[in-house]
Amino acid sequence: MKFVDFQYVMSSHRMGRYLNAVGGQTKKAMTLYRLNLRLAQEMFTIESCFEVALRNRIDSHYSSIHGSDWIRDAGSSTGMFNNQHCSKTAAIIATAMRNLPAYSHPKLVAAMDFGFWRYMFARHQFFAGGQTLLQIFPSKPRSTATLLYNHGFIFNELEKINELRNRLAHHEPICFANSIHTKDTGYARNNYSKMKTIFQWMDIDEDALLYGLDHIIKVCTEIDTL
Picture (spheres, rainbow, N blue to C red):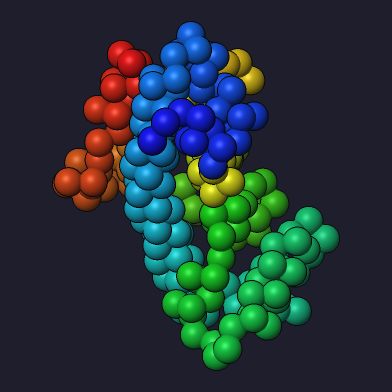
């Protein structure tokens, strides 16, 4: 496809960033756009596996402590999230319950988005749950005087991965430095590294899990050398 036709489909505004990143070379701009799409596909695959693994670990842990219907129960009038600090979490559960055609715990688990699971490590939700949730990370480093690997640390790391997830969902490019028309895979590499690290903290062999699916570094290198 000629660049003029490609740009017509994708818009000149959208393609301007790619053109600037490759010095105005139209062929390279189209190649960079396609490589960004490949990187987004690869990253979405990794993030999907990460999200399912994380939510399953949280669900398994809380099911063993609070019962097999813990999400439904937590949002009830007598549940652990029925307080002023966790009211939004309780409301999310109530909305999901209303939208389910028929209740089952697995269906309710699947209805919860990444933000719900991330907020299990927010201060009030973490304390309401009994302050035990860090047990799902048996290989997490011990905290030091200068670096606390506590629930707040996990919450902040998950926030960055959640931001990546949202960027992918809204078709935003992930091959540029923040707010700059400069080709840069640092953002993708950093978030990829965070997910791999947290996989390892959960004692999950991420290389075996993602076998045949993980080509992040290869695509990042192709972008870097374009």
